[in-house]
Image (cartoon, one colour):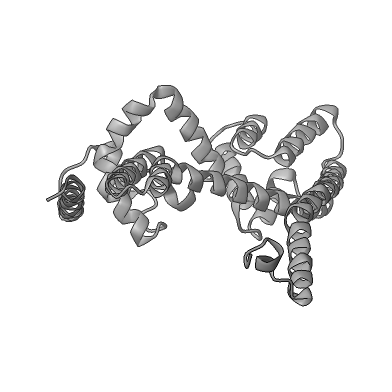
Amino acid sequence: MTLLGLGLALAVAAGVAGVVYAVGLIRSDVKLPDDLALALDIGRTRTTRTGNAIDRLGIRYAPMVMRMMGPARVTRMRARIDHAGHPYGLTVERYAARRAVYGALGAVGAVVLITRADWLLAVLVIAFGWGWADLGIWLAIRRRRDDIERTLPDFLDVLAVVVSAGLGFRQALERVNAVYKGPWSDEIRIALRQMDVGVSRRDAFDQLRKRNRSDQVGQFVTALQQGEELGAPIARTLLQIATDMRRTEAQNARRRAARMVPRATGVITTLLVPATMILLIAGTVIGSQIHFGDVFGGNG
């Protein structure tokens, strides 16, 4: 047996053993620490079956991954998960569990591919194991931010109308929030519950701003607090905030459209012009029935 065949056989055996061990871990009833059991239970009904199986497989190795990450990175990751809105009940412990599973799959796949000399695929598999969990969080942050920025101006318009009808700001916020669904509604609900347990309105909205990486949310909180300090009417402040947000979004849309023009020009110059020239030259050569063998002395 050659060295390549031996390496491939060992990699396959390791993969089979890993699958058998994984199935055993999933089916086992090993007692987990309370914090890991709680992390595994959070979001269990909200995540997919595949995600839940991955979490159960890797949750035992979450403490090891978190120690390797270090306290500073764990804190940053906890903040990122907050910004993502805890998609599918994600916690930092469940994130560490997924990093363990994806990392193990990437390592096994890379070994198999390296023994077959598929270096490019091996690099891609290693990149998958290293960054797949972070990619999901990054996409969730962007999707959540876009949803909030799209919902916020209309929310403020309706809130201004309800406040103008005579309700207090707190009651109007609860009334309007009951109609809306989505990430912004969840954030307002969290702020309302914080105020219910004694947190001041200013502190609750400060924490709301910290949980969201959105310029519009920061603009809303800042303008609301400044209006409260200056004694400006809340309804007028809300309408002004909504107007400013729509104006800012229109300006950003124009900037994005302006940036797309040189990109489109670059794509046309790089791809379409050479392809068109090749078609024209090939059509000319074929139509003229030139025999390159005769031209370069192939028959001589």
